[in-house]
Amino acid sequence: MTDFNKQLIGLHILVAEDNLFNQKIIQKFLNLLGINVEIANNGKEALALLEMIKFDAVLMDIDMPIMDGITATQQLRSQARFAMLPVIALTAAVTEVERNQYMAAGMNDVISKPVNPTLLLSALVRWIKCHGVMTADKDIGLECMETDSPIIDKQSIEELPYFDKTTLLVMLGNNQDLAVRLLVDFKEDMENFPTEIAAMIAAKDISSIRAHIHSLKGVAGNLGALQLQAAAMLLGEQIKTGLPTINMVNDFNAVFVKTMSMIAEQSQFAIAAPENTGNSEIVRQSISELDKLLKEHDFIPEALLNNLKENLATAKFELFIRLRKLIYDLHYQDARLLLQQLVILPDIQEAL
Image (tube, rainbow, N blue to C red):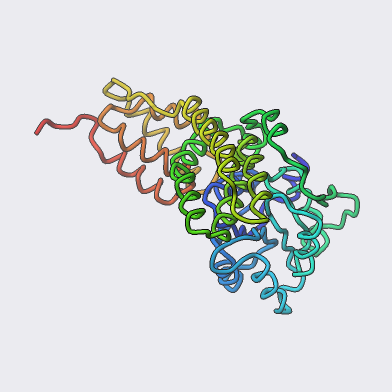
């Protein structure tokens, strides 16, 4: 991906995506490549940002609340100044019929979720080059055409591994801890999913069931939860003709429960508090280096965080836990403010 990186450094891309996990993965990936990213939670926010900021391209999710990606694309294409702005759809398991619909709405290309990093970068390079942001290169890029969704059944799901984090780690710059943090957050966020689906079935709310399943399908794929993604795809296909049966729901729930159990097993995120008085000189050096990287919205090496943790006094450890979460959640400005508290807080807490 080095060649892509050189061509994309410094670009400004708008990502319209309503799911927090997908936002984090895509933003982290693009930031690692030197691309500036703004996030919109729906089509309406995307249009508002386009009014204020000049972007080189838009990555547009299809199914979003308030305003979906198709409507947002149609509205921006109605303005002459956005006629040449590359808009690339990101959506789960796109069919040829759906792809044609997105293209008719004014999108330039379609990338299916889970996002293939090479296909995404290829599409960005190709379409941004086409619109004169970079020098022409007709041969660059790979075809992003998607075919109809593969046939998924219970047996084929069982043949899949539960997890394959290869693509996720590529997207996160091989940051193993961040990958685990995202999986743990996903587990916590999804705890009530089966109960919510059951309530929707009882209310015969087909549209909400489809929206929930669609959202889960995309996130599970991006996180590498292959069996859960496939089970969501199968359930999504089954409910196209009506409410799911008890057996359908039980099959899905079995995969869901096993996936959550495996996340719990592999989550090694708990950090032991260091039992020492701290090394203030090393801490100051680490904080200075970390603050510079945060200010520049640069990649934060795990080794730097570990070095800070190992040399902190026990009294500062709770602040470090909060700092690390802010960094993993890409809240860099808040992380910089917390760094200042680490500097001010004394190494020894006085007894009350």
